[in-house]
Length: 525
Ligand SMILES: *Cc1c(COP(=O)(O)O)cnc(C)c1O
Image 1 (tube, protein in one colour):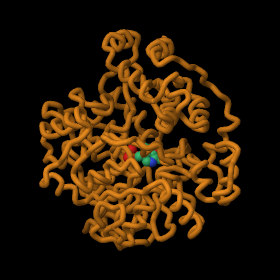
Image 2: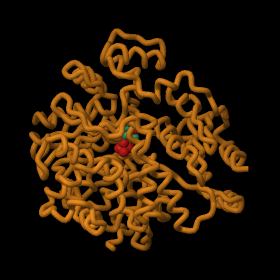
Image 3: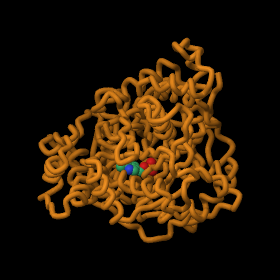
Image 4: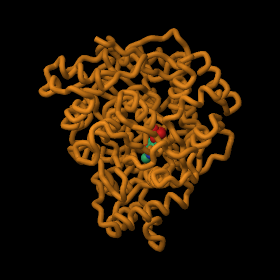
């Protein structure tokens, strides 16, 4: 067996299995866990050969093998990809996790359809329960966690604590809802999320869920959660009661690796749908915030998927665009609220994993740069280090460009983009046409097939999408806007939002930012 271990980006001492890394979330030295090596498509082939998968023995070339893979469904592919990264899990464990994750919670059997519109290919990652891409990983993570707990002899129930500014909270609630052996507690700023986001969370059904509004902002909620996590005495007390804290945030390797699957899937769909020949190169554009999604794309590329350029698309909070242009990361700037709020981020935490690669996997150098980020808000790569980032370019779109893109794509093809996808779509369109404006560089080969990662349904950001398409249309509130958007665009309302207005409110707890600890201990009585 070719085992893969997980190590920290900030020191050489830690070497653990994927199951342990998934339970820990963050490394004890503050670093992020990375795989000891990135497995390849050839290892997937070896596994399939070993298991006697029909046709695997007849694949002479990588191209043959990709054609064979393109006949798998999403679940089968997910199993094969997870299997080469999470080598400490048994085949049965992984199959079980995949089966529980990608089931009827998704509104299409395809799980992630690839649709051709306006000359590009949009990979729709919003067919899960909360109609955004975080469902892709958060549907799987709870099952990876409980399987890891079991195999590592952990008897306690896992308690997931999350602070959310809206989207992640509901996706985590949906993922963990009624998963045996887990409880989930979500804190959100009482007056800091949209009415639809709030209603989605407050109508969560799982008996193991608790949703609490905080009298404070997102930072208060986040700090409160951090304090509870670092309170050793509380941790000990709860351990005696049979509970163990865990975290589901986006730096968890159990969220990153499931995202690798859909990049391979997208490429295989192009083959299956007769759009490209196996082996042909493509470009991919990703609407980016925390850098988790696009990093998974770079892992797929390392595995052997012919992705030529990964285009990192930012909104007006364009720290990453500047980084790819200059090699300098600098978060000292005004924070801008945009119509693509899930990308309003000045510290992209998953970028640390790319930095680790760029510095030649030298944990001391990585730690130095991250310490500099913490102290001064900036760091700079050397010329040599920056050269390793050649497979990436940065691009950005301002607010007007985002809304214009929604309108343009709707008018030319009748396809409705959400605001985040629109940022990427606008960048992708300019990159493909060789227009270097607002790009850190042009793709090496602009003419290749372009995949745009579509991260949310337009029904998640109905107000902005509606105003982009019909400037004169003023819906009474977000709920009314849902019906309006459907009427004007002729698109069906996804089930997740259709039910939301009349769904019963099942959570009503509100507490002060200093009382979060009591809320937790009360729930875990
Ligand atoms: C989280 C999110 C993003 C950003 O993804 P990262 O992995 O943080 O870069 C983009 N779009 C939507 C809709 C999101 O929810």
